[in-house]
Length: 353
Image (cartoon, rainbow, N blue to C red; front, side, top):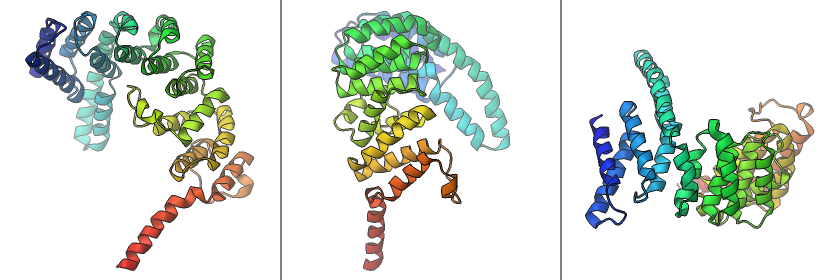
């Protein structure tokens, strides 16, 4: 707790610094921000002091002279989601001894209430985050959209504002983040958002912007994802190209572009999956051996609804779609090339020995 109180003081002090910092002030500022990250995020200290820290951060976002607003927005989003803390505690609860499990379970339940209180504290800054969608720095606009996506209960107020700023946004990272935020906040019946995303997808935007619109559409309507969105996802899975590095600059990235696109496919409903499967099979001829492995994985997941394939499966029990997928994979030499190369390396090692 002492560390958190100390970091609160450092942030409060930073609020009083002018926009133009001297070298020693820059170092102190960076150290204060790093301490705050470590204390709140990595150490996952939960309690009333965290609420106080959140309030300080929100006030700092209101200050025109404050530095690193993009970083503060991300920190607030991480705090609101509570992923790191709760996930790590639950993992320990499953892995420890019985006594430790009981203690940790009690702690998670107790501190789970604190997490909700802290979430509500972060939510108090929604108006501030909305205002930052028009900030002069694109990175801040990008991160503000990401933070706003935490608050689906305020979707009715946030979505119309996103519509306005998406139409006017020229920076591709900021616009992509707004599109992803729209997909996260909108409901399936939100036809206006679906139409906006589809127009972006068919428009003159960059590859990253179109990918963001496709991912948002897949999330927004997993059962009836438009074919245009599925086509963009398939093309990205086959060859991500230069957009892969740019995608990593978005705060939405979980691991890499291929993994995130694959997970979008995994979440598709049966009707959308039936649209995706022929496109993925068609992509076999253009895909590299590496991308084929991912395509094969996605195809099997879609064809078998994510269920494990039994080794005793027989042809009569297969649907026509499942038979087509398995036949395509079996008849593709490219789909097996990496395994062949690996086996060849093993044989060469054995021969050399």
